[in-house]
Length: 183
Picture 1 (tube, rainbow, N blue to C red):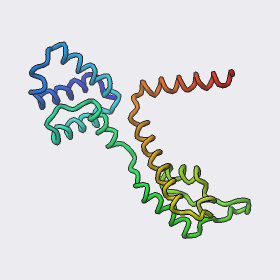
Picture 2: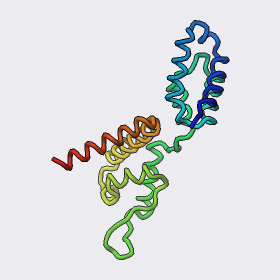
Picture 3: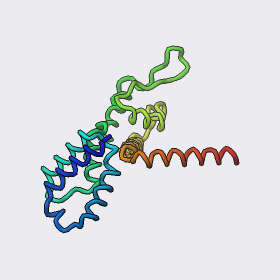
Picture 4: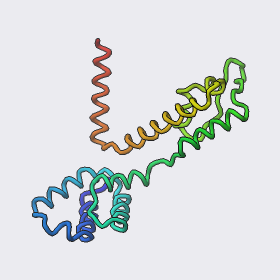
């Protein structure tokens, strides 16, 4: 969390770096802009926000949009994911090096330990046994890659959600869940 005084210091750096952007703004508009930026960006850690501002200043000649600064912080903190093709390669390697192995008690098959949770979720959704027994690897690859990319995108969108929006969405989901139970 960025405190008000930390945000004010970061804001002063931005204003000093982009004097042409500020020169035509009235004090009221500048104050309102400050409040807008602070309300959306203050949920980010000050150190990361400051680094995003400095990075933006080093690479852009225009004053940053809120979304640019937020995106830079979130990109720096997001888990690194391989490409869908690289993840599919891990699945192929697992299938080619034993594929389905019997569990100790012989009551089913289990996949290997995957290198990342999203890959494991996609394999679970598609079914490890079905993947290993499939006769249409090209279609499996296409479905896998589409699902993998969709889950990576969802993770990024969830990470970008403001805390206030996350709380509201949680309350609405709970309300909808209760309504479904009551019907």
